[in-house]
Image 1: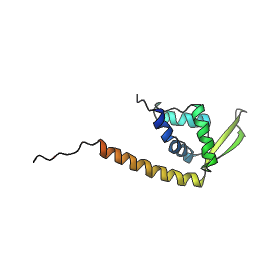
Image 2: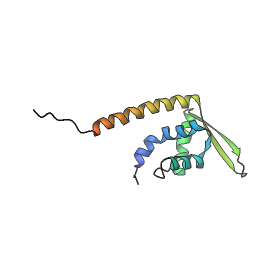
Image 3: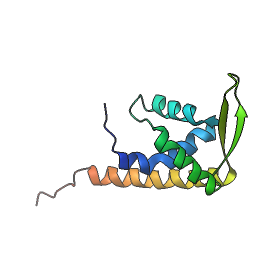
Length: 115
């Protein structure tokens, strides 16, 4: 099992959360569950990590939230991505593709000349 550092998880939290919300509205526990399942159990947000990020995303108008009563009669806060959030996700994807390609290049051994 891969051990992902807290720093890397923090750096990826915005694109991870926005990616989940682009699929449809969700609430906190469901977001945690979806990331955990998609990562094969490797990545898991704690409540203490997730909710401050959600608040910051809402302050930046990348997501909206709304309190509702769920089918089980519990109050839940549902989150949705905004158009601004979709644009941010598009930029995040470009940034991560660039970094992934850069790391792939740097991790590939240099060819040496045999002259």
